[in-house]
Image (cartoon, rainbow, N blue to C red; front, side, top):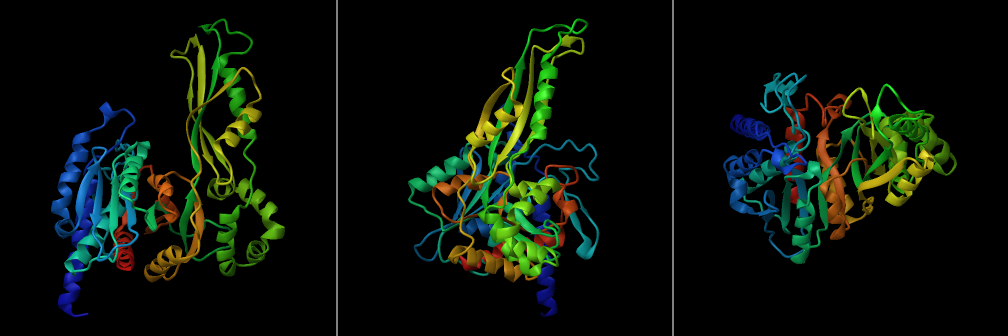
Length: 453
């Protein structure tokens, strides 16, 4: 590389970092209550994109769906099945309390390869949006055009599971689009998620769990707390929560998990390699072992349930007339919302506790971990992350991509970030941040992927 070329590459990288910082400064926090959302921040971000990515906006056609979800189309050179690459620019709240750097300042710390960009959305998921548009910006400057149409879907209400994503899918279906590849947030390049495996894994989601909000509700006569009955509403509710906690859903190694373990087996040390290679014998005890480990390993092998909210009376000296607990349920593929709710009812086993399903979505379809589209995606990962082993998995969270299963058989979930456990822990938490080399590598990944589409 000549000195001039090296200087040009450095300038491009610095410009890419500045664009990400600019996006992080928009406080695009989506909230369930529309009146509580600062829509001006969303509008300002959308208005800023053409100025931040001028070449990209010369080659992309943009329309807004459901008000503020941006759907871009990059026309291909010839007819064929399109691809859809997703990101969302709404973020979860961050008030700044306890943050090392303000969540909406886009501050940069460190030098050289140790530089870090701080801010809400750096990982989830303005970093992906910036790397996607940055890749188009780079390729457009080189005169590149994809073989087939490419859509960029940038959602504005993913964090609140709003109706915009289904509206985009409905729009594309009305136009006869059946994407060969859909790629959204999900797995990343990680280490230490499976016992005995020391190599980095590029975990690519081929499905995602269903999600349900289930409320346990107890109604009893109220009154003064100085004269409590033998069993109060809150006591009955607490008993139900304790029973639920003692009865987790059954664990099993499903077909996707088997593929994952088969892929990592050659890279595992003893005795784990033998365990992963002989799942016909070891499957059940392995599922039990992972379930007891808790956290990510347990979530891999079962439907999960977690009580996340509790509500009682409005005052400390008043008996609760209505006590409630919200249970967040993530339904594993192969199961159903109905089965998960049935398990909860059996665990609670109290006719005085009502079990109400407030919201529910079934697990997604499972996309193939083989074939042309999988191989295309795997080859791109191998080009940019040659140190990583590509493996399928079931995404534990929910994303907009699940709606695309209605029009595509190739829906995958992968963010091209190499992340430490500490960095992954900042998702939806304090001090969300991304290392500059990680972000720039994601830009390289998206440029490589676009060249294959």
